[in-house]
Image (cartoon, rainbow, N blue to C red; front, top):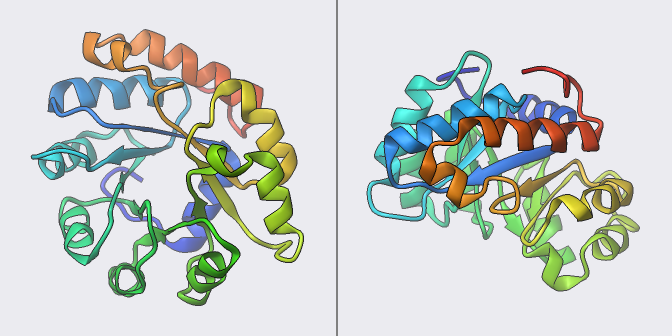
Length: 223
């Protein structure tokens, strides 16, 4: 998957197999690449790099070009069409937003790249589904009830495929999976800033391997 895009079905299958999608931001390209390598060594094949600072698109392009074989690096924190163009031009394998935008959905569909819009309310979720997005992010999930909220929303929408993000940590993982999420997005509680900044790829690999084992992810013993 290195340098390639993931269609909706391919991304959904990949995240359902992995169960935990690590996400992080690091402005230094070399340190970011080391972090991707460590997460990949721990078994991650889907990684989200968030576009949260100046020059993040250049770092993303570097990560995409140098990603280990079989690893898809997507762009997070994509809020609008301009940001989507930036992410896609950098080679993002998929696009994730904190919000949902039908124009971004249309652009990503034209480019054959999965879009995971950020949603919160049932109305926002249903709107995102109408744009053809098979996977939706519910954010910030911990602030609105966590696993209980997922269960409540999936009651009238039982086939809903959710990426639960925002305040999700390792201790919460089983509860989210039991609530029926397709996957969780896990940031600083998994991809610790100190490890990224110090280039501690071994610590990132160990943490990723452990969380995948806890999740019962397919291929969790890899790496």
